Image (cartoon, rainbow, N blue to C red; front, side, top):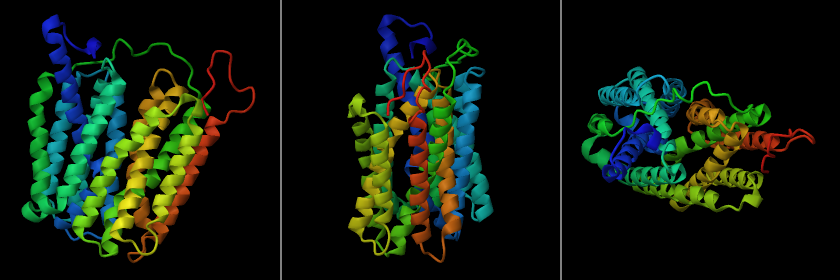
Length: 397
């Protein structure tokens, strides 16, 4: 992040950079918290208003899809606006959206409140990721961010039933609003990393075949993951599992996702991306199908762990694939928005398949969509003979 920080003495430079990274991580975790906690988030909403399973899916979809659009918008603003202003704006939207959610008691008012919150969440993710990407060691910065986010969300998912029972749903959303306002004190450390110096640089040509396959595959892959992850809580409830058993399964699964991301980082380069992505897709579908028929607490736990492990295994592989499509990073930046859009559209699509509490169509539909997404990605990896130009490195299969 050296390029984004004001001149400092050597004595104070390292603490300032650490404070800037901590500020970016805190903002990113707050913005992405709902992604890690979709099932828990959906379990809180009935405490605000009597919503159907379909309406729960639509509320989640509105939040996540608006978040995706805001991530895309933030990418256009990074080289034009002081990042601190974007951070302040994101925190105001998050606080206002959660404050409104806490006082909402109808389906429409909850949707409108989550739209406001989604704008702030998307801006927060976009700016925080840009700041983390400027770190001296961005891989380490993102790894720490993922670990911190997984730990916090796992702890919250574990304790959510007890917190909801003691304080109620409204109070928890008001608490998030308060946290957003408190994070405003970190603005003094957040860097102003406007990209004006980089805007308009001549760059390498985008590999359109790989970019289209990567982004389309990412959309369908995360659409399926979002549908199943979003409805895990409701699937457990439909099989009469205790709230504590469900929250424990989701918390452990969230933490298990760290193992998937770590596994991807240790894969040998000669293995390429095709085979690990195929394994990730197969494990995901197995986890979906485990939720057919009778579901016990052990089955829900195992399926949830496999789902998040496969999901996090695929994440860095897909990021690398999109980075290969464009060395300047435009495609991998677009991936963040497309991924969130797919993840948010998943619960809405699942809601349309729900029939009188029967999750079978959702499970089969998600399995087919995920297989389709993986097929698109693998198709983009397999180039026609002679398609590699003289100045273009071959894509790792």
